[in-house]
Structure formats: C-alpha cells, structure tokens
Image (cartoon, one colour):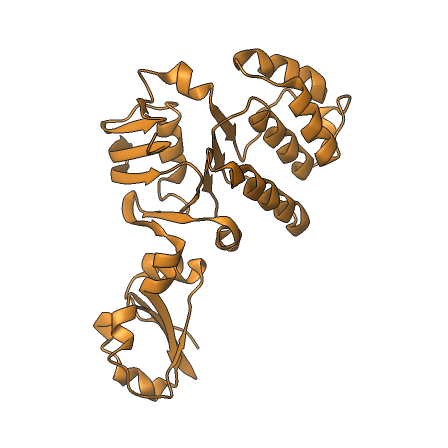
Length: 290
C-alpha cells in the first residue's frame, strides 16, 4: 500500500462557501498536520473524508479504496477523535465503551484498559464529571483500542493545558513508530505540529496553499526583519506578506528573494508555521502598525 490517504481534486459547495480542488496524499509511517484559519474548510474536508457529507466532485481513497464504496471496511480501521466529544454524559467510561466497542471488528478490551491506566482513568468515572483533558484522553483511548491503522484528529488539543497537550503529542509520536500507521492532525496550535508533523497541508478559504514536508516548508520560506530604511532593499511585491511599524518591518518571503539582499542590516530568520500561515492569509497588504 503506497498511501493510507489520497485526496484528489476534492470539491464541495456549502451555501456561500466552496471547497475547491483539494489534493494531498499521506503515506504510512507519517504524521500530517492540517492547518488553516477558521472557515478555511478543514472540518469540511475531514467530514468529506469520513463521508459525513457528500462531495460534489473529486475522489477520496483510504487504504487504496474508495471511501464511499468501501465505507464500512475503511472506517473499521480508522480511529476518529473530534474536538467536540459526543458522549452520553450520564454514562460511565465502561458503559460508554460497551456502547462503542461492538462497532469494531478488532476491538481489544485489554488494550483499552491499558490506555485507561496509562491516562489515569478508571472504568467507573462518569463522563459528565471528567475534565476536558480527561475526556480527550478517553476519546483517544477509544480511537486506539481497535488497532486502528489511521488516526484522524480534528482539533484534539484545543482547550487543553500544555501538560496534557504534550502528553498527547508523545502518545501520537509513539503510535507512529511502527511505520504502518498514519495520523492526520487538524489543529490551530501550529507549535504542536512543529514538534511531531512530517508533512503540512495548508488550505485557505477553501483552496490549497501547499502540501509539503515540514523540512521543505522551512527551506522554502524566510522571515526578514529590519530598520524601516532598509525595506527598500526588497521589492515590496516580492513579500508574501509584510507588516511595517515605526521601528522596523517584518515580512515573509521565498528563499530565492534572500539571494538579492546585500544589506547586512536585514535580519533573516526561520519562520514558524504560525508566521507562514499568518502572512499567507493576510497576503501582501502591507499591514501598518504603530
């Protein structure tokens, strides 16, 4: 199997929003981060992958098979973790597990209790009494306990404290070590992806920006800073995004622009994923601040 997930020219119109020609691929053994601003189409894309809504055009293959034609088969091998956790609040962890487990052919009760123990949870806990972090750990326990080969996560770290987020990232890193599984991880917390992601797919307003390895991304973009007088060293049209203020400027450029800069007063830095996303979304609007 060459790819766990193949999305090709995926499109869907929803009221005034249109997801258009989204394409990317994910191989076994890798983690892909999925980024974009609110309303960019991330959750719509995930719903299409999971066949929760219907596509207008394009194709989605999971484990090399059409996600609609072989829906039951592929979903049996997917662990899905939502930001919004839809559980029966008055049930205990064990009772909720007993409701979900029969849907999976490879459910492993021993593995489930192993994760509960690892996460500091126990069977009798009532779901409505769990903190958000504990609910997320419970959700992850469910997702991992049927030997899923593909983990899809939609904003799993939103609202979690830094310690719980770090624990979650460590778990995901451990999962991927056998090189047979893959993880698709949508989040606004781009710093988390810098720690664990191998690839990043970035969409904005329903369109592709890029889908690249994280090494290629950081090799492609550079952040430049300097005194206001030095900005003339760079053609403003060459900025992907630019922010000027009274004491200087900061902007995102492609790497080849750096070769044209001769003035030593300009500082060149590696951007963060947040920088790259921010300046792409803002565009070359020459944002001015005081």
